[in-house]
Length: 216
Image 1 (cartoon, rainbow, N blue to C red):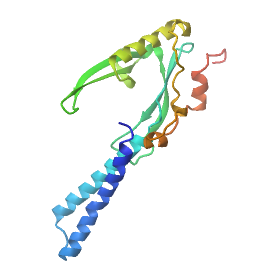
Image 2 (tube, rainbow, N blue to C red; image 1 turned 90 degrees about the vertical axis):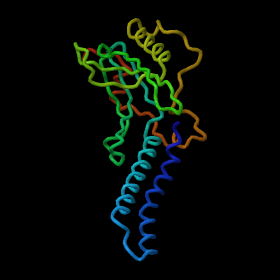
Image 3 (cartoon, rainbow, N blue to C red; image 1 turned 120 degrees about the horizontal axis):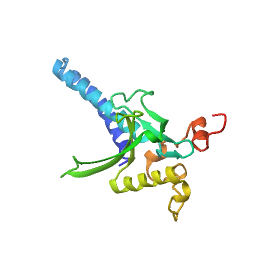
């Protein structure tokens, strides 16, 4: 669905202008100010359309091209590149953007969820998330997305466990190299063209790809 929002956004921006324009035309043609109820309807419509336009635009163009997860067996750490967004604050800069977060492998727990969502006549939505537990307890303090389908999530989680327990030599051999979303050739999807590339903070990038030294 990514790529639809960049076209819905201009429509909503035009709609936000249309509401006050209609009130002005009404006042000019009728030679009197519109009623309070009409002004409130126009104001609510303008704010809603402006909010929707900004939300659609930022969701399509500010989300990174990928949200990779790095598993470091030597450090027993998991590094997550996550896109944070807040629909209630579409104009805020601090509430939106990609951030790198670090979690202890021993505190992660996979969760599978399967629900029926509002998809026309109804549809099954499957997802697998990784829950971050408070050390020594089962209290969940954070969650992040891991896979869209249960079968895919089970496979990815099994490979992550295998790697963290035995190392890369225990993983199966893949016929093709991993996909690099940063260097992907994008032709027609405007949203993906405008989306920022994945850029790990320098310190975390180095730490996530190395083993701890004697000075750590």
